[in-house]
Image 1 (cartoon, rainbow, N blue to C red):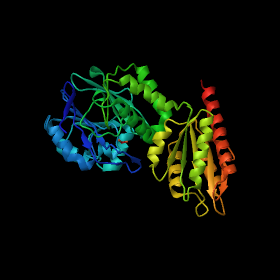
Image 2: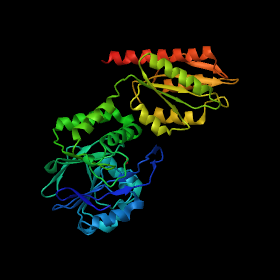
Image 3: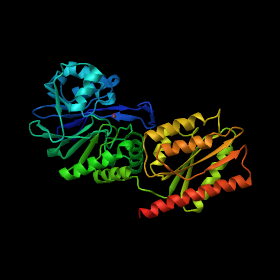
Image 4: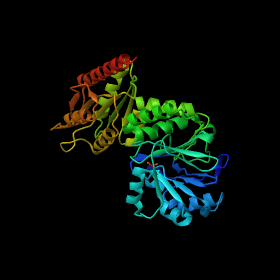
Length: 402
Ligand code: FEO
């Protein structure tokens, strides 16, 4: 993809990773992704962020289509994760910049990653700014959104926020702007990205949004380091981030299960009926059909999380253990849950699931339902009643916040 001028003398020089489906080893990215880097042509020519090492030659050609690399004066590293800094050793060799700007924690991380103490680091913090000539760059640290070193760069003269991972999405496309792609798809990918990568840091997200508002930054373009650039829907994505971070309750529930001989699956369907009777929308997801990151994407929009597994070797099914580990790490808040389980002889899985949900700080409706072998009519009625109980708890939560 050729470099694209996104504002006068400011170029997208990123790389499209068309076929990556495994993002950072833990999240699915079925639409691929991009690694966006931005080049500002001013008295001090400045490159913002880079790309993974394996794409460094693509970045090289992108930059050279605008300017020779040795004309670059400054590099800004908003974040040191290797998808944005992997090309740094190559770039430093080619560019030999006068200065490398990063946060203080970014400085430490660059040293830890690349072991090059002689690079011309200039650590910055919130409130610091530099002049590029006609333009200024203001730095805003965004610690834990989503790494300790993360920061935004803001160019007031262009009302441009270069936001690194914030406001990103995993979309590989030839289009670069939000008004060139389907908005519903873009928002869905934005939500999927947030709920798999940024969710645990939601309190920090709210604080950063407050800080941006307090600073009165005028923003007419948000240029993230993944996916599509926001220029026609800036207020929409800012508001969406407030909503994602708030995790307000809604009348929706997910039933997530794994099964061997379909007893747990039958229980899931009966629980869904109970939820629906209470006016709560239900979605059933079988972990053999959905990756854990897709379940988290669906959980974005669900206050209820009800988990089911047969007992397997005195434990729970492996995919359920995988999902619970992943979900707990993402620290969702304000959720209501319950457990259900089938078993043949020992039957530990109900307690294991219940304790997992509690350890993830989910409000658990107990005691859940346990079924020996195959559920009969009465056992399915018990499942339906569990669905009703969870449904009532969800509705109460929604009404309490209305
Ligand atoms: Fe896109 Fe945290 O790296």
